[in-house]
Image (cartoon, rainbow, N blue to C red; front, side):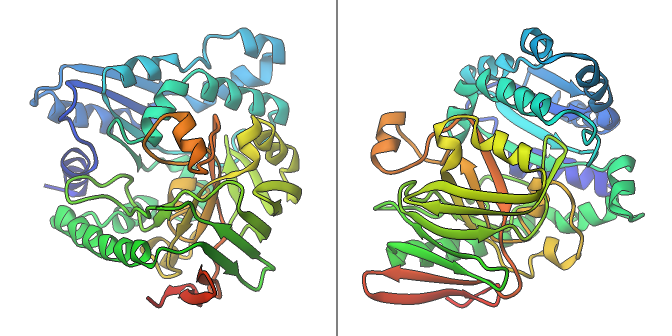
Length: 385
């Protein structure tokens, strides 16, 4: 077996569960066809018979967006994602392969990109709810492409991806070890029963994040399933109304392949009251304008500064990877079981979107607050629990 075989074996045996359904939804990029077909041959040997393939052609999408007007985009069926809802209703497992071309959409009008994002999210709301409530099995996995490699200015991206995903003949054991470590960290955080987390660093971040009563941190997975590949975070949803202060991004954010960088967000009673950005300000504003919940936080995540992804020194221009290199927050929908009303009563944010952005640095300090007591959780970007 080679690393590609180990990768496929890891995905099928550790990243998705086929216990709830005999259906599978695979989203991938056109230039990853060979890998996906090899994966499907393995799947066909199982009980899975219903496989839906969403093949994304970013070059075609770029051409389409360059020609269509805003009104034509609204009427186009190309951006409709309601098929996601159909497969979520079947309790299908979802595998999303991410293989971006950073900067491809830089010449597309920001209003068009914002509209496409809104259409895609609004047409798959049932799927999003099932995803964030963990009612379906899903995973996001990176795949190599030469355009991505070129944009990063390196010549060994495929090997780097295998390394940060711990892919070798012991891949499954590697992740079982990582999951065990994550579970131990989660238990420590949950046992503290904190009221707030306070983030500080030299960029100017000074942010207090309130936690819901009976909050629950989660990690990279459980004994059976690894949620995302790779994953080095522990995360929870904050109380949407108990967030105050200012936070600065520490890594660029690529949203629909548009760059947002050198930005800050200022929160008052949970909502963004002020913001600024040197690059991509209109795109950032379009994210916040998606709906009411898009101006509140739905996730707070802790990642050590020396995670395998951070150690590469590479900004991957891809959220899945960059968010696992640094502490991060997310605008939009939070996680949790229950109806929307039940989540709202617990303080969990609701929205059509969920957009992660990175805030962690090598000097990040995170302090847990419980009543009058303060407990240092992270110092200089490392856990000290």
